[in-house]
Image (tube, rainbow, N blue to C red; front, side, top):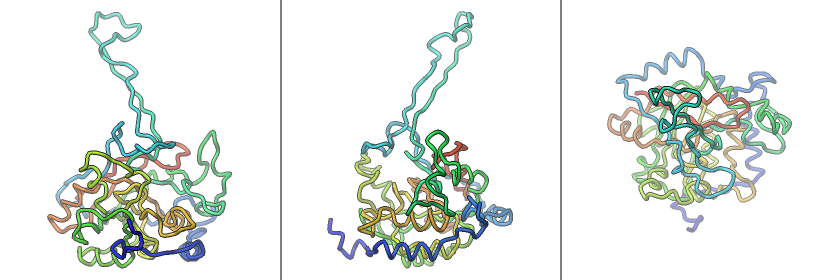
Amino acid sequence: MDLADPQLNRRSYDRADIDRIARSYRTWGNWGPDDELGAANHVTPARIAAAAQSVRHGRVFSLALTLDRHGPMVGGGPRVNPQHVMLRTPHNPIPGLDDDGLQRASDDAVYMPLQCSTQWDAFCHIYYDGQTYNGRGYDSISTLDGATHNSITNLRDRAVGRGVLLDVARHFGKDTLAPGESIQHEDLEACATAQGVEVGEGDFVLVRTGFMESRRATGAWGDYAGGHAPGLGVSTSKFFCERHVVGVSTDTWGIEAIPFETADLMSPLHIILLVNAGIYIGEMWDLEALAADCAKDSVYDFFLSAPPLMISGATGTPLNPLAIK
């Protein structure tokens, strides 16, 4: 694959560029020195009530992958697919209960990395130059307790509001964007205009590339997790930050175009959005059914409910986001 191919819509940045952009959108201190909510401060009762008016028909779309051994984490490394085991099945009697099999029970357990499937990234997931959101340092993470600051649990009652789908793949007339293909600021602008939808303060933006469905259709995830992928380019930070959105989610493993648009930095958009702007990042969201419905009725906004699992100190969490139209 030739990453210089203009068809891939890529741009090039260095660390100095990212530092400049990140500082320009930094919100540290905007809500006080102890703030851990970031852009979730834009979620207000009035905005939630207004978002509820987006429910017109009561159609509900789950945007989550199932948590099982067949998920996208197939490349090795610390993230693996969920391992579901049975602790007790109804084939065996309940210890201490002698009732000739009248009553039986089943129990189970699961081991999984918290970022192995449809997820939110917490601010404490990424550190840059020794700090994460609002200037927290490495000492805000401990081996025993996890994150003492900027945990995903801060989003407990704020991951709700108006959702907007930007179906970039369909806007480009493609089933899927190509590995390495970048979505730029003006692409999001044009897509929103074509769809007749506006993105504003307090919104959650979902961007569809079609990449998840293209891999699922082959019956094998391949290098979906960590390999070359379409995604958001650095310039999209302008679109999201200047509109004061709360979160950005895509149907890809890492939201960004991979290889990254920076040769000397990993995940530059994470540095800008998560670390500096305090905008939450959602990854591996299944947008196919929702996108088909939006294309059918030309309505691209909806009520979104996507609360995290309340795992103390977690740097991310799996979840079952619900879009309700």
